[in-house]
Length: 105
Image (cartoon, rainbow, N blue to C red; front, side, top):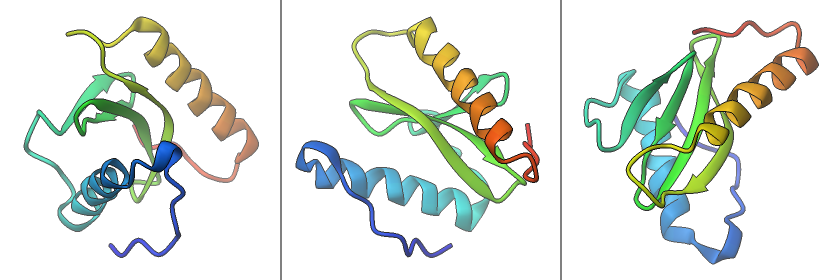
């Protein structure tokens, strides 16, 4: 997988953007990330990319695209329930706006 689209990083956090892009590229190249400190299934078809200290919630579409729904800065041991709810809501909204694209859970 080669990432060709430029990414604009908020707050000039170029290193964090680099890390998340590398995690996505690793997923594309190998189909999985074995290190649970970097990637984890959160249930309901939502997955978390976990570069410290941030969390990027995403889902897979057609088995080949990674759609990041939302992100947050980790502040405790558990993911806030509102973040997963927001990811599910954003996924549903995305799929409504793109009906020709199937969701792969």
